Amino acid sequence: MEFKYDVIVIGGGHAGCEAARIAAVLGARTVLVTMDLTKLAQMSCNPAMGGVAKGQIIREIDALGGMSGIVTDRSMIQFRMLNRSKGPAMWSPRAQCDRMLFSREWRKNLENTENLYLWQEPVVKLIIEEGKVQGVETAFGTRFLGKAVILTSGTFLNGLMHVGMKNFQGGRSGDMASVGISEQLKKIGFKVERLKTGTSARVDGRSIDFKKMTEQKGDGEGRAFSYMHDNVMIEDEKSCFITYTNEEVHNELRKGLEFSPLFKGIIKGRGPRYCPSVEDKIVTFREKEKHQLFIEPEGRETNEYYINGFASSLPLEVQLNALRKVDGLENVEIYRPGYAIEYDYFQPTQLKHTLETKRIEGLYFAGQVNGTTGYEEAAAQGLMAGINAVQKIKGEKEFILTRDEAYIGVLIDDLVIKGVDEPYRMFTSRAEYRILLRQDNADERLTKKGYEIGTVNKERIERLREKEEMVNEIVELLKKESVDPAEINDFLKKKETTPISQKTKAVNVVLRPQVTLEEVLNRMKKTKGLKVFASGRKDEILECAEIKIKYEGYIKREKQIAEKIKRLEELKIPEDIKYEELLSISTEGRQKLNKIKPTSIGQASRISGVSPADINVLLMYLGR
Ligand code: FAD
Image 1 (tube, rainbow, N blue to C red):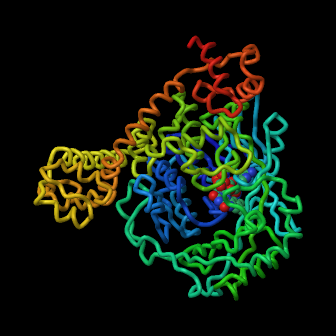
Image 2 (image 1 turned 180 degrees about the vertical axis):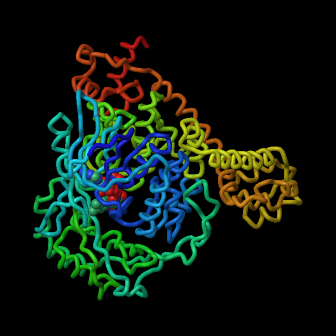
Image 3 (image 1 turned 60 degrees about the vertical axis):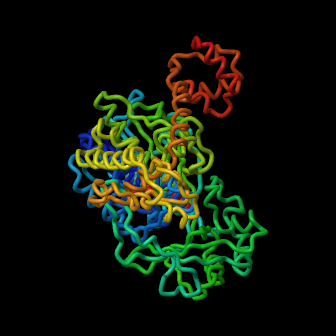
């Protein structure tokens, strides 16, 4: 059988779901072909979305009209704003989700998206003719022809799972591996390498003694990931629990090291540096007496708990014996063992910033296949690949976000320019403009862009306008109005900050670290008519206005730096440049420039191995 579509997406994980949906929203007839339709957007590891830097990514996806934020809001069972002690510009939302509900919500949404069709079958081959992708072929021989193909097959390409000395092929626990695609792409010259990741055992909540652990409650206040939602109150918010490993646990784990596929060299792929297995931790941090573990609920209608911090590929009996030495887990029963998985990924320097491959026209890669780890990183790439596939089909401009516009821009630029040799996850430290890339302002940064290309609907853009109006109204009022000593001094004394001696612009009082915007507004006489107090979005608006006021100086400075750097991005390098003729560039520099083929001086300057002296030569060559 043969079917025709515009866009074909392989894989229904976080990348695939975002890619397929947004392509359909943009009007492309799209089919999502995946191995198992009951596992759409399955959370292979712990069922949590967001966290530091990742929370910002979800907000950005949402601001562009993606679904991950909305699905998270609909399935979260606990919400926490992380980094609260660091000031609002650094806050990061994190939600514990109901794993099964998360997947069901995605499916409901995809099934109700116009132009989008779902198909369950493994793809075994890409149809490629004359350097251009034409479609895909499945295991049963079904052919899907299209103008663009987006590959989002996660950890499934030649996936090999390990528990102790036992290993077998699989895409993740309970799923078969995908064989054929990487072999085919390798043959036509793609660089395919191996990475590894791992996960912990899932345990039965009925066998946990929670009284021996420290309860970690949610914030208990309404919050939302999506800019489309006013505060979402989680009814009966579930708690996570904290406990620790101890010497006895470490001793049990040590007994198993001789059967560790990691230490025996059976696992060859490199694992995530910042998410090591528990056996890795006790070896690398030998002196540490304990490691923190988070016991996290998997959902409302299940007793299953995830043990965050205990990823392991040691033999099952070693995992179980060690777990039973942890406080509160003495009688623990396991649902599934922890395991490690090795899989193929494609070196992402083989991609353009649109995520289209440089080698095959119309073929896009997104998600874990590009060497990243994490749902958020995958979803973001899926969204961008989906948008760009349709932009290209329509003959419209590429949709690329820059490093000062979004974490998504940082992510893709890092992948394409620097490449990956260990699983890449996002951190705030990867972004040079952290004060600009906040979770409160992703909509201000991106929603208008989404509206221009058609990923954002009228309702969303209206909500942004309403927010901007309310924030501006507050900022203007504070800049215009003054407070007098009689009005505010008692309060300032209570806050242990110097009283004012004469009428002072309200904005200058808000700038003081000891006071909040809301406290000052509550003490001012002329705030009654402010729209914010009549809206259901008070917390969101006040937070945003407060950050704007308190961080104004920093924001301005980062904007200026970003503008300067942007000039380098605007200096384009011609496509037909012959680096081999520019002998004043170092050999390493020439090789790297030739391999990555940066399109601007800005990109060239971020390639490791390209020195400032090399950049000077390039600038001279370009007549600068
Ligand atoms: P996936 O979510 O893996 O989805 C891939 C999809 O493609 C699946 O639906 C699959 O059925 C489909 N598919 C694959 N091949 C084919 C084919 N040939 N034909 C049709 N369909 C196909 N992330 C973290 O942030 N921290 C962690 O600690 C962590 N640990 C992990 C541990 C394990 C064991 C695993 C498996 C993953 C872990 N992850 C972790 C990674 C996280 O799950 C992924 O980063 C994320 O799910 C990647 O999303 P994706 O959409 O790229 O791929």
